[in-house]
Length: 285
Image: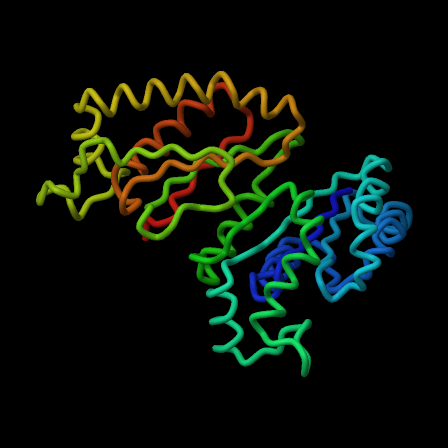
């Protein structure tokens, strides 16, 4: 049996996450009282007609604060029953959440006559801090549109064929912000930039002309070898520590050339020694 708990701040994409999971065969429940989590898991395990039941629930700040405080013990209780349980936490920066609520005219669940939207967004972070700390997978949706979020959820949550650590090698551009959900970040902006070559500018790091150019640069090869050696040594130790998800972010200026080339190359090399390696290019449109 697999249970996915979806949490996070309002406006960060929890409804989208539940829609994605429902489309992929999960029985979904929104706004489950946290104290019912162990009972729900037990009933699903004992009474389901499915051979491998899949359940997804949303637990967030709409719960009573007293129940949220008990969340760590409730989660531990579920996991002691040998149920595969992933905790997903979605977030976005305050400015993005303010904009999303303003555009949709939705009411934040914590707003009232004495609490403004900005205050509600701030207070929600404190209420959910314990859940965020326990999250197996954190996704920052600040720079993701609806379709990118769906793709990310399918890649990270559903493309995990067996138990163990799922590693994501992600390229990004610093000009759009560093991914706050990354566990390891490598800055490759010191390398020669194909952007300044007019005949290469319109290609990406996945295209042969850019790949050939970067492969011929001694600094690029040295960066690749050093980074690969580090990851080959230390990623298995993350896995040995029972980490469910690990994100390795490779960043250049725009996220189109150097980081894409290195992330793709590192991903292909790591797939030879690690079981579950995924590659994603955040800013490559």
